[in-house]
Length: 90
Length: 173
Image (cartoon, rainbow over all chains, first blue to last red; front, side):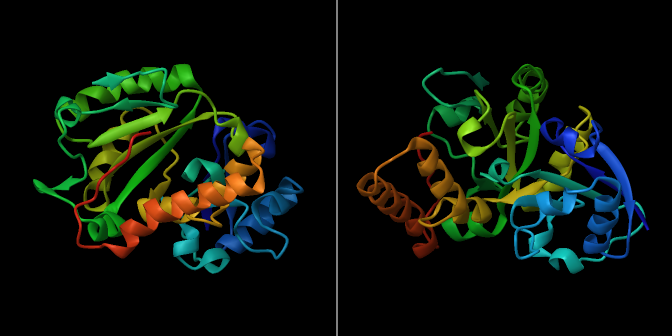
């Protein structure tokens, strides 16, 4: 399942200077694990010390994934994941 | 109409009627209650550098004038104290109209889709909420001031949660 992951300009460094990367996985958690292999440390940036979403806002097709099933949220081919700093939500 | 008042930390795009006291939290011609705002009201987030957001604001202003977008606001300066080094534009609308508003945004190259409900935002600014606490830490308030700020935030926001039937009222920002 190939999905697009987008970040704003301020987070481009996380992905080697790109604001868009692709990843694969059946769930958001799997997708994050795959990205972490390509860009080590991403997992720690996205998840808190308990391994939960909370350090940042993550959206699947515009919906905050904490309102879905969090890391267990299923993803499908063509889905879009957006990642933004937590403070932007206020 | 773009309102760029240096006394505010935000630049706003309002319909002129809002400046005459008309509410923008309206659905199908009816002002929304607190309960309706908590259920349906929210915003698409657009992050970027200020000059780019200024250009985008000019392009979106006609949609606000035509009431296709209820209201927009964006940071005058990046909120560095909250850990952000770019500005955030908030394109507000009712969830039931958000797909139409999203289509407008995509015309101007917006790709990252991020919808945040007003309820989520209010929860971040309630006493103990992550953004309220982060903001107070950045202001280096003493504990007495923090408590006063928490009390004020709690009073304002809990009123919305506790009075679902009242017509929603915004406050000056």
